[in-house]
Image 1 (cartoon, one colour):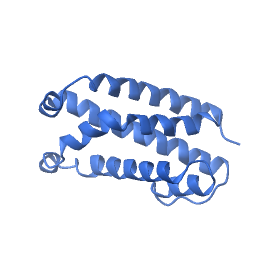
Image 2 (image 1 turned 120 degrees about the vertical axis):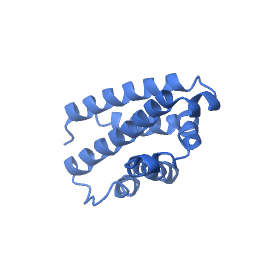
Image 3 (image 1 turned 30 degrees about the horizontal axis):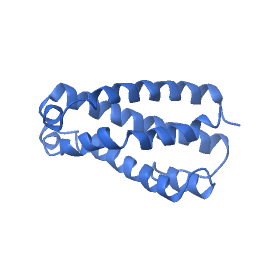
Image 4 (image 1 turned 180 degrees about the horizontal axis):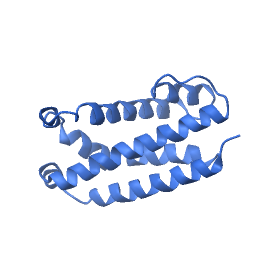
Length: 143
């Protein structure tokens, strides 16, 4: 059985992250990409949001004995195979995991940081938060 306290805590954190990200949606593309404080904050909270989804998924997979997870990209496949999400959501989630990996791994070096296209993060904040919200609702069902 899923530990509802773990999920509830992660869902609360995710809600806070999404609230912060929503405040960044009011800025124009140029304001967003040119302001390192705004961009940096959005990038971090986007990363944390995706990690919260993955963390909740890992808990569900373990607690419900749904299979083995070797890497985060296994999670959407498991959830789809269990009928918890559809193909479209699986594809969106897999793409989000890729975005998270790029944010984390491409930012380890200051020179690499400059190579990340801030427009991709802007687009994610502007147009993809609803995808995270839909994933959030998947985990709310386990409460």
